[in-house]
Image 1: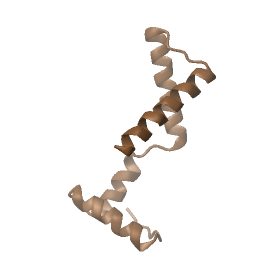
Image 2 (image 1 turned 120 degrees about the vertical axis):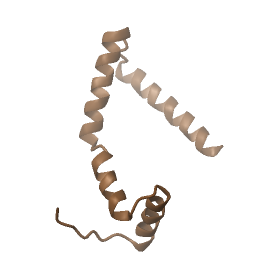
Image 3 (image 1 turned 120 degrees about the horizontal axis):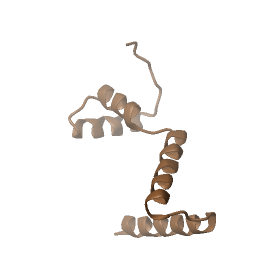
Length: 85
């Protein structure tokens, strides 16, 4: 496998290296792990659609766009409250 060079701010590199070390990994291994495990927006949307489909089949869950917006707002509110704690 060929290596690639990526230019990022030193502060970002140092933070990633610190996180990697805390996980017992080298920065190189940690970045490869992130590349293998993070989802693209399209992959996240596909998984969300699959989850909605399974839930609809299982228990009839099928929120309309307004209900989905309300649910998203409630999740944002709860996450904001957790961040403030």
